[in-house]
Length: 234
Ligand code: F6R
Image 1 (cartoon, protein in one colour):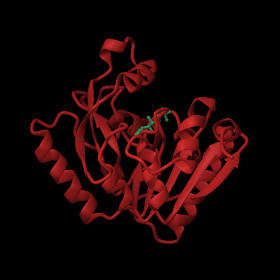
Image 2 (cartoon, rainbow, N blue to C red):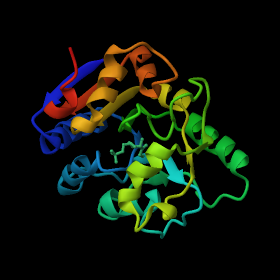
Image 3 (cartoon, rainbow, N blue to C red):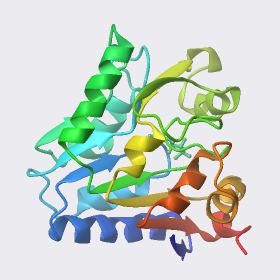
Image 4 (cartoon, rainbow, N blue to C red):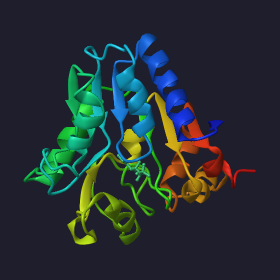
C-alpha cells in the first residue's frame, strides 16, 4: 500500500482529487464512489474543477435500506448535493434502498459492477475497520449484500440524523469481493478517531475482523491520511 500523509483533511481532499483527475485524464471511465464526512473535501475540489464528467459512470458503495432518494439522509441525496448536481455524469448507480426484493437487487448490482468494471474505487474507513458497510466478521468472498449495521456504526452515523432511532438498521452495500475487483483503490481517513483502524488496516494481520485489512492483498491501493489518522503507524 502506498501511504500519503497530509497535514489535514483539506490537503488530503486536494491530493485525492489530483489522483482522480489524473486517472480520468489517463482513461478511467468508471468510478466507485463513497459518501460520509471523509470525501467531502475531495468533492469540494472536484466541483470547483473544470473536469468534464459527462463521459463517466459512477457506482456507489452503499445506501441505507428504507430511505427514499429524496430523503436528505440518503446517500442518493448526498451524492446529488456534493457532486452530481454540479458535475453531471453519464450514468450513476447507487443501491436502491427502497428495493422490494433486496437479494434480487443485490444480484443485479453485482451484474452492473461486472458490466462496468471499476477503474478507481474511493473508500473511507469506519472506526472499527469497516469499508463500505462491511462490518467486522463479513466474509471477504461476498459481493453486494444487505448488512445489519452494528451499534457502533449506528451511533457514529446518528450525528447526521435528528435522533438515533431514525438511523436505519441496515444497508445495501458492495461486498469486499466487489471492492477488491477494482483496478485501483484510494482510501481516505482523517482524524485521530480513525488512527487505530488505519494501523490495523496497514500493519495488522489480514483478518475478516478488520474488513479493511483485505486491502493489503490488492496491488494498487493508495491510502491518504492526515497526521492525526497516521498517529499509530510505525
Ligand atoms: C460510505 C461508506 C462508509 C464510510 C465510513 C466512514 O459510503 O462506505 O464506509 O466511508 O463509515 O465514514 P465517515 O467518512 O463519515 O467517517
